[in-house]
Image (cartoon, rainbow, N blue to C red; front, side, top):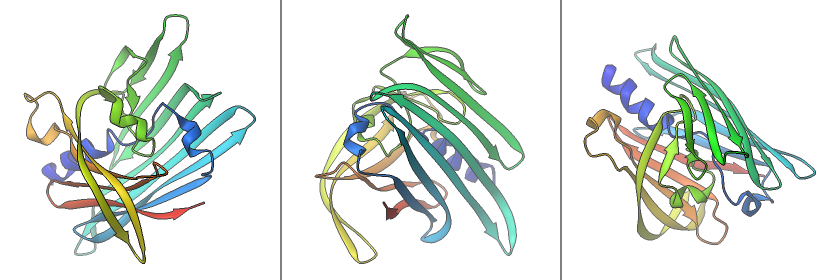
Length: 227
């Protein structure tokens, strides 16, 4: 059970929001992904894009649970809000419930000193403004040297590799995608804390289509709905 929790945490600690060229996503108002473990549906991740003039807020909600023989072994729920002004990141906040454990993070751009201020359950301090809060919906994450955990504020340095072009089929729809692999740069980390995730973006639109990783089972995010 402990291994399952650690495996879940390493994915979701880096999976919750970002900076960059948000104008690429101007036509999207809602994204929804279905979460699978060993090909069994266990939950969802939803993004609502709210616009008011030059302001953009992205409201995210994640919920899933792992059950065995009718018993809930693990429950996860997170809600966050990310704010931009004229395409520039301004702030991010989240609250997460992992079983009975509460986690949080608040991030703000300090424009005068040109850095990010982080207050989180795992890290409090400053960070380079080029670091990205680790959601996958924004393809600019492929350029970042590090992700900031959208759950606890932990900084995770990453190495990103372009794997190649692939056609991904979800349901009755096929997507022409670009596949990337994200790995932790720090090889001294224990295996349970290392990032090793594959992400697929649609080639022409940069839409996040799929994510996959394998630890104590095979996990996938699959695009379910786009508005």
